[in-house]
Length: 553
Image 1 (cartoon, one colour):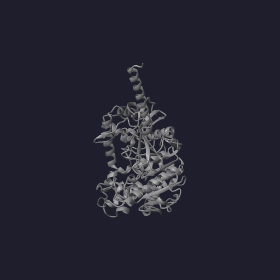
Image 2: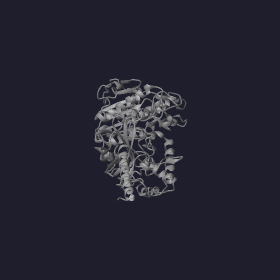
Image 3: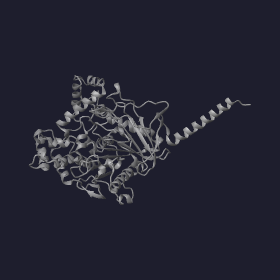
Image 4: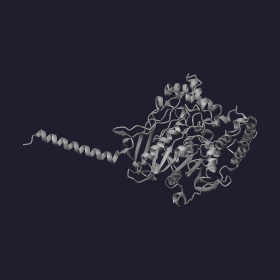
């Protein structure tokens, strides 16, 4: 006769086996586990807020070793393999940023993947690069929930990259050439190439997409020889490498200012970098912020204080030529481009400090209006600045004309450089050019004081918005934008065929002719139009033709 203890033990084994089977089934259905290049990861099953479609998210996957201690201010190093199952069900820390308080961690180089399927479907892949003036930003779901994009059956990827001094310190020599934040982006794109098939994506069909500083980052990646084969298309919203703010022209000065502020007093770049590596990340970030603000307030139109630089020559340089020269000679990745801007970028001044405040200052001088890229000759710069000031403000002081100051900033910092990028690059690659003219609460500018669509308002239509609208048309405009973006991701064409949602619009390519520049005007309806801001753009054409320094003209 079998003893009761044996029966009890057998029942325990059976129950345990059933429990394990149920657990495994539960994990396979609700908590997907994948094996990627560096190990196993556990994700999460969810549904989109729009069409309630199933998707799977894997968040907080390391793609580089933590850039700590000796790795601070250095290019990212590929991550090591791990053992066991990595929990990839929630966001990891953002990179170090802010001032009061300082937030984030240096251990921040993580990537997120959202996919509609775990089957091998070879879906098109959209890789998002956030903006934030190269000083802030993150890849969290709360900030950039991709639900609307997932509804269109693409794989969505985003990631953190280092900003501020942590990502863009440059001593303008080979000790610290700069652009490590861009190198973070390149390493993330290589990770996508090596892993995205495991998430149902097609590594041959990757499009990169950025807004503001993220768009400028995309432009630099398109221009870089190091990005060959990493993507087949690019989208730039409200930014390009030609924007005044997108290039650091005082990187060496800023680096040594921070050193002095932190009592790392030296004229030797190696000693400076080694000294700054020993500083607590919070103290470094505070001085980073203070020094950047001080230099920026001296002349914000000179560009960011920590951001992309033209590196001294070395074989691994990400940026090694003037941006306009690269665009004008076609020495960039020949991929289709989707480029656009909002109708009045500076109409949301709280998002672009301190541009407008600088123009409104009673201390502003005539040469301050002479933009970067114009001659450094003081007398000629005065003449150029005077022509610009007279055109926008006439005989009245700029400090009394805030609306005109907003328009000047929109034109000089966004409209003109974006337009110039379209004209120069359309000689070599297909470009679809657009402008967002539709104003609504989804833009997230409750304190709107000027007409037009301000900086970053487009994001409320593309990503999951926590702002609610009573207008169904607001959401319709968003659906149109998402459809055109994902069409471009899939087909390299935002309107590959007639579509009722898009009012059967067929969006033509832009040309290299400055007086016949086709663009899609996204308003209440979709409209094919010509030459946005034509009169104001002719002023800048004339100014740069007369006073610009080669190779700008």
